[in-house]
Length: 143
Length: 89
Image (cartoon, rainbow over all chains, first blue to last red; front, side, top):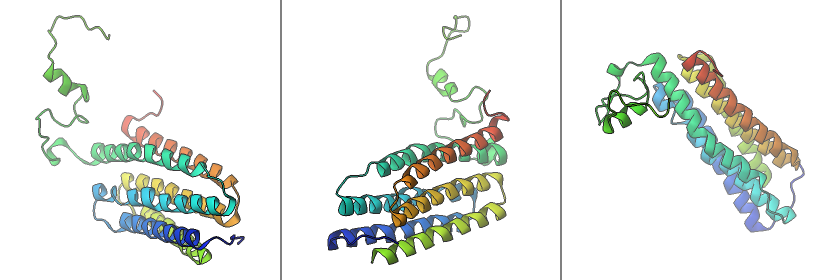
């Protein structure tokens, strides 16, 4: 492996971030295997996504900066993309679990008594309409 | 010192990939399998970055970026297919 000679501070920083990233990646995957039910399993891989991949990316940035003297922007792009997309993925997977395996009776009661938005036929807009009721004969502007 | 840390990091992400594969095979429900596949793409992105690191090649960053994109789109379309029975309505 063509690893360049770096100054001591860069070598220590790259090593620390690589070991941290590897440990968190392993913890995330182990948690995915170990946790007992699907909703808690959703929690474990977030460690691998944020600190695991993030540690490897920061180590790569420091290495490129110390060996070639330029700041690499690819890593920031990958981090940005992962941070934007992982909540959407988690929401979709939770919705799949809720719709395939749960009923409104098996879920905890929501605080504002408008029911689980995912289960009401007209979706999340129902709660908003309860707060701002529309007259029965009024024309619907959005239709 | 970096070489040993790199070997440790590649080894732990590869072990994580195997654990995810175990969850894909074992996972009692379909949502567990989708989640495990999504985690596999994240671990594969980390492995690609570390491979680019050890081969000193900048091409792997583009590959990792593409992998992140395709992994996100495939996970969302799989979930959407299960939720709606269709992907693009």
